[in-house]
Image (cartoon, rainbow, N blue to C red; front, top):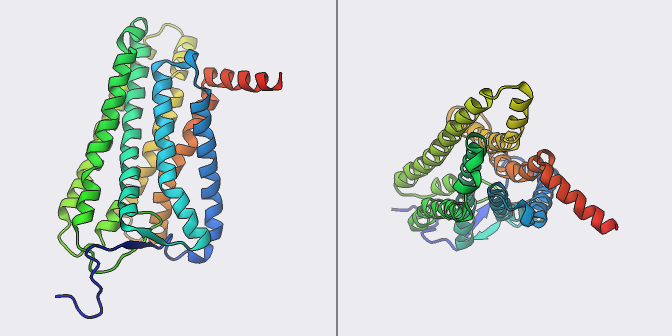
Length: 313
């Protein structure tokens, strides 16, 4: 039985996001780097989508456009609300909107991971079977891969909001986070939420485990093919073709791995540091991905130069 000082939030109409607890006085200053990263992410990913033309319509560029879209959705799902908390103290979020935000962040993050696997497959075929690249990765195959990535992301994460919606929230409706993070919401429920916790771990290990394993296997085969080349110059030139994908992969997986390890073993790490890390690892990849591909991909550089030269003319 609930005591008299506890309000029953069985179906709360709103949740309260605290932002970064313990650093409320610095919210305005913290917002500056996050706002800067968000602007760079929006401009960079929109540029990737804008410059794509028929001459760039190979499998890698289809996957790159998909990655740009997922990055835009993930960053836009939480940064505007987070900035409204920092700037205007707008902490309330509708319960349904909170569930939607949680779904979009996790769903498109899983899609982004799947796209990195598809990119690794493209690099494997391009380097290990260069003469058959266009016959293996046809537009039909690329479309099927893209559809599989989208369906996996949508279906795997779908139980999260449904489970979160059915829990009774009889403790509080205050979420000590800057967005509706799944585990932060589950911890507020006053019921046995082990199914949500176990399913969350299952999804994390399924996505991270299978995807990272697939990428590692692809790169083992790629490295074997590279080291079998006769000259050092050929090896260096071939490895450069997958350097941008390797950098993006490291930028996408290392921050969440670090966050997981700090949650699992960093019992003395302050809560505000956990939340800062969680915000950074979601926002950093969308900011870095277009920069990495823009710097390392000659076709993108040439297309940008062509656009600016045409405008000046």
